[in-house]
Length: 234
Image 1 (cartoon, rainbow, N blue to C red):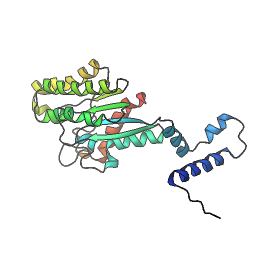
Image 2: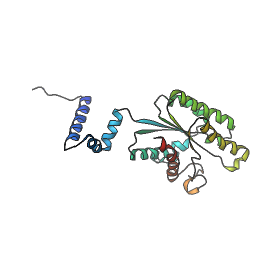
Image 3: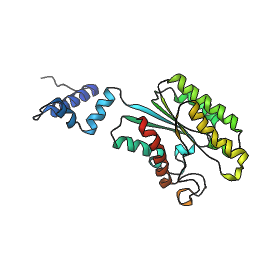
Image 4: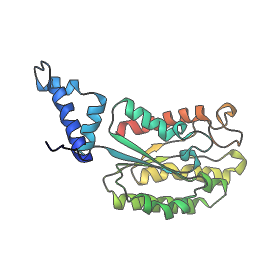
């Protein structure tokens, strides 16, 4: 008798068929019972098959990248954990880059928009502020990034993270810098995080030795700041 070997594709189909048949066994009384019996793995598989997994793109600086902490401790990864725990069909893409300015981001965004984006979270401007780049220049660059996202994915939901500079930089700079973020959010009808570093900035126990970047515990607070605004969009 000639032996039969499964190809990789056939093996996957066979495995899914066995899982489906196993799920059908028992005394289900209604279609609602079938849905209730889905395990998280089965639910996730159905979401993938139906094309329901949506991307959330976090586009930002070293704050988003999680400089100085493990990747799983950065706030975008913590947001992924929250979504997973609630069985929400979203995939977080962490596109944070240390040292990124708004001008750098404007040059980089096109490459990242090659993949579908359902929700776009923009966290840029902090490095502009630390370098004293004119506020109007930062505003123009951020608007250009927002425009590119809108053009490529007009149905994408947009979120903007607000940032502030320390008082030592003087009110002449810090006030208009702080105000540019809510103005941009309002202009573009974006969900708005008033201050990403709320509860962390100025707290030595939550900031690394460089005096700028959050510790792992600080990122937990950042994640909460983001989640409060992001969750209603999911």
